[in-house]
Image (cartoon, rainbow, N blue to C red; front, side):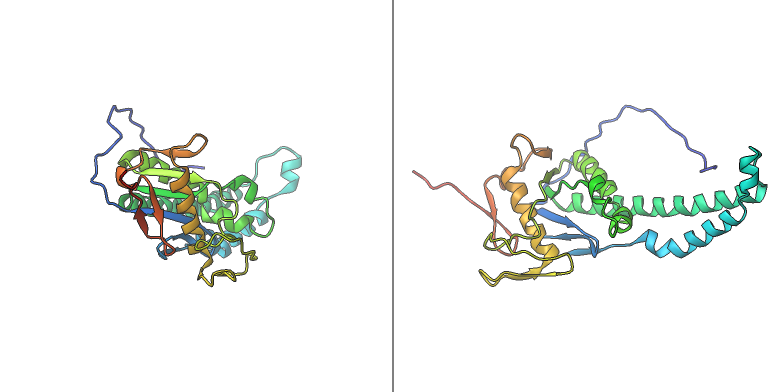
Length: 251
């Protein structure tokens, strides 16, 4: 299938771009209801490019299948010209969805990096998650791996710290008191029976992710890129996710 023409150039440039510090840090939670939710309560809706194009893709696939001749396959003869045309139309529709997802991930990652000096996110095992038979299609459609790749690349380019933290219990633990509050995937609101803290499930997770990112960045074994800004050293978070610098007491 022809996918257009490409030109590749090898040039020597300085990848890093000097930018002014923003004084902002963020923790983001990747999800299916929202593409991302941050610790400040901002959310980005999931575009669901595949889901929106699924009917067209299925229709194109059926047309392709109708033109397939199993007898020719058995006789090792080439399929008809109409079959190859239908196959190319079907492949082009998939390619369009893939390009839409890539551009969307790139745009959101660029916005996050440009607005923050430090970005904490979950170190998700996407290959393992797509084995879930009920969520595999939605997870693949979300493009988490693509988003993470762009986030780390742009973070390196613009000098922002990107740190991947272990995802264990980020959705279950209360970001206000730290107690574990078990909830199913269908429970979208975090309500802590221990301290009474109420927050959107994904925002609560994002606060936990940022706390974990600040506590682990720079330590051995973490996936961190870039240098932690000096103003963020020793920072902790209030219950609403805002940063508060912790100065050591004078002796």
